[in-house]
Structure formats: structure tokens, C-alpha cells
Image 1 (spheres, rainbow, N blue to C red):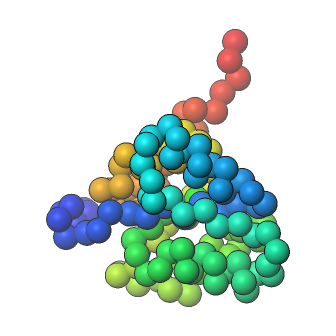
Image 2 (image 1 turned 120 degrees about the vertical axis):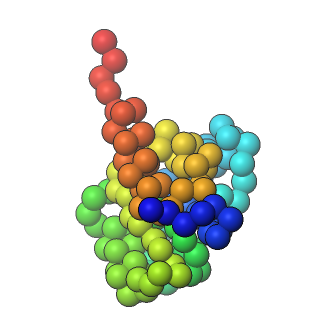
Length: 135
């Protein structure tokens, strides 16, 4: 069972992607939702794995978070997972979701009161539900 809302700070969303994708997704969510400073974009551009891990760590900053990654493999995922595993504590509950898409991020910004595990599962469900081939 999750902590009561009053006992937990709202989640931060960290979007970790290749190139400029994270910034573009965050910009689109801000335009759609009108909410700012909820999602933090992190790019792997111009850095090695250690630097990318530092960027992810700085974005999470010890807060409860969901880290959204573009692909289910690669440098962005490895940096996110390494960060989560290296700093796993009750105070900094962080979950990682791969295959980020715009609908899951829009939903996330309106559901930040959830616990990280619940928010990650919700993001997965929303993301999967919105992928389809229209007839």
C-alpha cells in the first residue's frame, strides 16, 4: 500500500533519450498540459556513460521519480538502471519505464500523487493502450 499523499512529495519525471528527443517530448507535454517543471529532459548527446549517469543522477536528485527511457536497451537505459541500482533507498524510490511515448508522459504529469511503482505501471498501461494501427 502507498504512503498517504501528504507524506510524500509529488513525483518528478525524468525523460532520458538519445539526441534531442527528451527535450522535444518535454516541450510537447508542457504545451499540451500547460504544466511546467514536472518533467526533466536528459540527453545522451556529447557524453560517455559515466557522464550520462551523472546527468540522470542530477535530474533525479534523491527525489521519488519515474525515469522514462526511449529504448529498452542502450546507453540511456543502462545509465538509468545503474543510477537506480546504485542509489536504491526508501527515501529515493525510483522506477524506470522504457519505450516512452507522449501519451504516457501527458498522463504522468496529471498523476504525480501516485507512488513510483504505481505511476510506472500506469505509464506502461497508458503507453501500451495508445500504440495501435488505425483501420
